[in-house]
Picture 1 (spheres, rainbow, N blue to C red):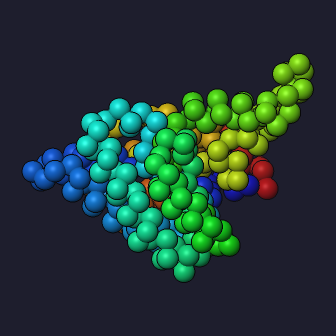
Picture 2 (cartoon, one colour):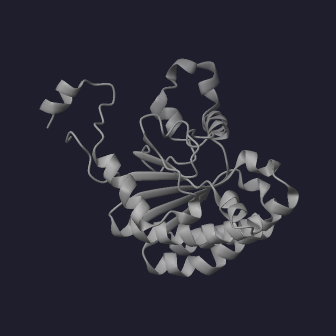
Picture 3 (cartoon, one colour):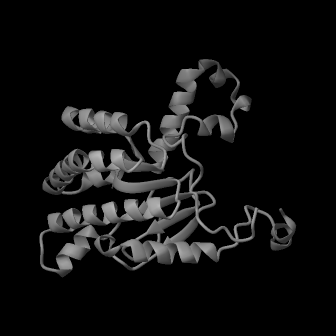
Length: 244
């Protein structure tokens, strides 16, 4: 393991600031969300070119259902429209798409399009793209416990057999490694219930850029910062210096 990692294997992004971007321009919030879709497209393309293996985007949190009903409705329509428009490009560019979260909260039509989009890209492996929608880190851990007990009810009588590895198999992102770099746009410095388990040792990068303004150059700046970080995972700098 080298002292400084060059390219993170797994990058996660909290895409914050769409509404503020629109408000500052005296536009309706939906304009910010629409512009945010363009930023998503640019970052996906850039991540693939830079050799990132896993890219996870926080599109809609469990708590976002509390927003005004008209805004939630617009977000759902945008989500559906983006799936329909972008899935062909993702498929052709070698991107595998997964949508992770409490999908039972979505309308049947949207769930159907999600399943179709995932199926169309299932054979791809150039970039593994995960979109977290109706997702929360606490929800993820709770559902993992439930899934573990459902898979093996005998565990309830023998809790001593439960360890991190066993529980991790049932997390929503069990197919992905832990997050190396977590980026949040919009100036806030918190992780907002996103990938709580998976980000235990993530490097946290906060930028004042609003999400619609986040582009390939902004991603490069985050990656350059990440390359300066010493990732110790509980060890000392001296141990890292002599490790292979």
